[in-house]
Each structure stands twice: as structure tokens, then as C-alpha cells.
Amino acid sequence: MKTTAGSLESSDCLITISDSDALDIKIESVVFKQFGDDILEVITNTLKEHKIDKLKVLCQDKGALDYTIKSRLETAILRRGENNE
Amino acid sequence: MSNLNKRKIKVIKSIDELFKLIDINDFTNISFHHHLRNGDGVINYVLDKYLREGVNNLNLFPSSIFPSYTKILELIKNEQVNNITTNYLNGPVAEYISNNGLPGMLTMQTHGGRARATIEGINEIDITFIAAPYANIYGDAIGYLGKNRCGSLGYIIPDSKHAKLKVLVTDNLVKDYLENPEINGENIDYILEVDSIGDKSGIVSGTTQITTNPIGVKIAKNTSRLLFELGLIKPGFSFQSGAGGVSLRATKDLKDIMIKENIKASFFSGGITKYHVEMLEMGLVEKLYDVQCFDLEAVDSLSKNINHIPISASDYANPNNPNQVIKDLDMVILGATEIDYNFNVNVTTDSHQTLIGGSGGHSDTATESKVSVIVSPLIKGRIPVIKERVTTITTLGKNIDCFVTERGIAINPLRTDLLELLKDSKLKIYTIKELSEIAHKYTKVPKESLKRDKIIGEVVDRTFEVIDNIYQK
Image (cartoon, rainbow over all chains, first blue to last red; front, side, top):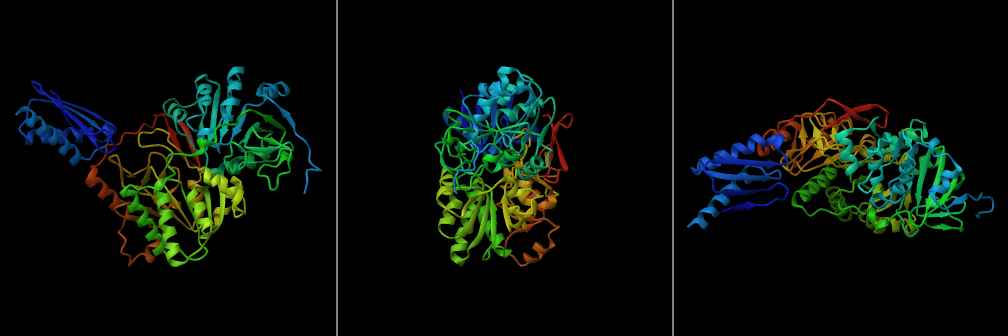
């Protein structure tokens, strides 16, 4: 099952998460060259905060700031939780 | 006045007919204007002939290159083009050159520099094809009448005098006398009569609307306040702004100040939009000196408002022309893709090294005006606009005075006079490094990895000084 949050508008990102046996993070970003490592770090840290170690995450980024990426990811996680109930 | 002493120009009906009269291989340095912008039909029509004939070693001198100029790309891919000299380019041609370069060089001139180089023989143009919306049989032409009217023909006037052969291309040929023609028939060798020179609706670009984006609105407000606090908005002032949404918003804010304070300006110059025309018709400004129309309202204003005056690129911005209009400019508002710690500005490439524009009149007006103001959001899609060093220098930092963003303003430290005027201001004034640090708090510091292996072009200032290289992506 896939859950999404965000958009593909400029300065936003679209996060898509789905089930996985391991942590699988994929980043497609218009600013990958400049900020790819930073984006990976914010996603990794957010997952840690939520004690998640098995998830497939796709981040399609259009130049979102860290707090946007974090909130989109958290929204997707919460939506997924609701759907699982 | 009459046509009595005028010489009729030979009229030909097709490009094939023209090159039966002259040998196409003798005319490989070719120039065009871009006043019809994305609606131009002449460039593709003419260059298709060069494609079909397989003429090699072409050197192209279009004043700008737009996405619809597809025959240029075909000629490049066919390895028929050696060098391109222009003022601005975007779209597929720009992308292709960014990735592949040319066999020769891409030379980026300014509008004023192009006029100067054409007049002084640096740009050696064998033949110019002048799209003319309204022409008479004596070779006189104007741009603001006719079914495909595009307004001022300013950029091609130097070519109409200094190219070796001058061909007027028109879809509207009349016998009538023309008062004050922009193109003087004395210089014209042939008239090429065609069904259509293009589509005038293509001159309107998507960006020439006043922005309502809250960041843009804040930048414009900061800009008009800055200009007012610097004492520049005073009776008889002169002004130029680009046609970007933020610049136009700043122009609107200026208009509100002028109405409130009962101030009338002497002239606006450069690219003209309906917003400038409205201020002329309201009596807020005495004259518009127009080198390019950005919308159809501006085009139609030229035929009804006597104080809306089309001017040549040389009268606009040629540094060796003592009458250049912009030497009297009090202030100019311009955009930036990037700006750096030394106030150098880039509007030629993006931060990924793709060609996306060019100087146009950026460096010309920044150099000549008493105060030059750059307006831009501090951050664009996570990329901070302030760099340690811009990817490509379009305009030298010594010619840039103020940088206005939504979060604050930086003044070039060379302008101690402006800093003194602003010492008690409530505006947020920072050093450019402080503004950069504010941006990095939101974005973090970007990792830069520019390729600097192969030079594909150069930026030539109006002084003819090469101020930067352009590198292959």
C-alpha cells in the first residue's frame, strides 16, 4: 500500500511511502547535486525519531527546505498509520 | 514631404529568387532582430534556405534567440554553424549549446555593445534580414503598424545601416509616404515580400504581468521604499525597469508614490509594457524611449502617443554614442539569477550551467544609471541567490549598487554615499555576506561543483572587455 504527502510544486516535495523489509530511501531532486546529502539526512533522522526501520521512501523534491521535507514525511507516516488502523 | 526624390527598391517574392540574384555562399554572416520574439517567422524562413543549400561556416548575429527559432538548432546539428553572436538566448538552442558548445564560439554581447560592434565593424555582417511589419516601396519601414506589428525596431537599426547587404522582409508593402520611418529606405537593397513575417501574438511573454506572489510583493515594496528614501523619486526623475513580475510590481508601487506625492517623471526607457503606457497616458511621465515592446498595448501606443518614441539600440545604449538615452537614467531595476559577494550579477546561465538568458540591456543600464537596483527572492527553489562567485558574470559588481530581497537589502560598499543616506533608515540593511548567511540558515550551504573544463563562449561587455567565460555543462 502506498501513502503520499506533498506535491510537485516548486519549493515542495512529494513523499511516497510503502511497505518494505528494510530501509529503502530513494531521492529524486532538482537540487540533488547541491543538497542530496542534506535531504537524506533529514529523512533518516525523521524516520529515527519515529522509530521506523523498515520502510520504502521515495522523495521527489522540487527544492523544498528541510522542514518541508520533514513535515511531508511525517504527514505520510501519520496517514499510513490511520489507514492501517 | 513626399516620395518624389525617393528611389524605388527592387521587390522580390521569395528567398529562392533573392539567391538567384546573389550567391548565397558570399553571405554567411547573417543578422536578424527578435522584435517579434517567439512569433518571428522570418528567421526560420530564411535559415531554411541555408539548410536546403547546405551552406557551411555560418556566423549568426540574431539580436536574441527564442524557443521558436528551430532552424538555428537544425543548422547547428547539421554542423553548418560556426559562431553565434547574440544578446540573449533561451529554449532548445540554449540547452543544446550549453551541453555541446559550437565549433566556434558563443559571444554574448549587450544590446548597447551589439549596436556599437555593428557600427564599428566588429560584428562583420554580410546580410541582414529585417522583418518589417509595415514598409513602403521605397524601403522605408516602421514596426508599429501592419497586421504583424511588433512595435519598436530598435535593435536592427544599426544593421540596417552597416550590414553589407540589407533585405527588408515584409508582409505589408504599401506605396504611401512614411513619416519618420525607423528604417530608412536609402540603406535598403532589396524588399522581400512574403505572405507572413510571423505572428504578432508571439511577442507577449508570460512573465510581463505584475506579480501577486507575496514574496514578490514584499521585494517590490522594499524597492520602492528604498528608492524613495534615497531621494530618487523627485520631479523630473528618469527610470527603467525590466519586464519581470517583481520589477513591474515595483513600478506600480512607484506610480502610487508619484500620485500621492504629486511627482512627474521625465522619461522611462528600455522595454515598454502596458503599465508604462498607462503612466504616460496618466501624465505621470513625459516620454517613453522604446527599444522593444513587450506587449501589444505598447505596440499600439506607438501609433497614437506622440511622446512614446521608438529609438535605435545605438541611441538607447551604445557607449560611444553621445546621445545614448540611458546615460541620463537616474535608476534602473533589474533581475538576477545569481549575485555574488562582489555584487557581480548573473542572468546568463542558471546555477546548473544551462544558458537561460543573457544581458540584453542589463549591463548597459546598470553601468550608466546613477543607481542600479537588483531585485530577487533570497532563495529560489532551495538555491540561495547569493553565491561566493556567480556561475557566469553578466554584469560586473562595480556597476551594481543595491540588492533588494524580501528579507533585507545589501548596498555595494563602494557606494558610501548611499550607505550614508540610509544610516537612519528603518529598512533592513545588511552586508551581502550577512544576507547570504540568512539564506543558508534556511537552505544550508549548497555543495558547488561547476564544470570548468571547456570554454564554449564568452561574455563581452559594452566596453568590449571579456568579463567572463561560459563553460560547457
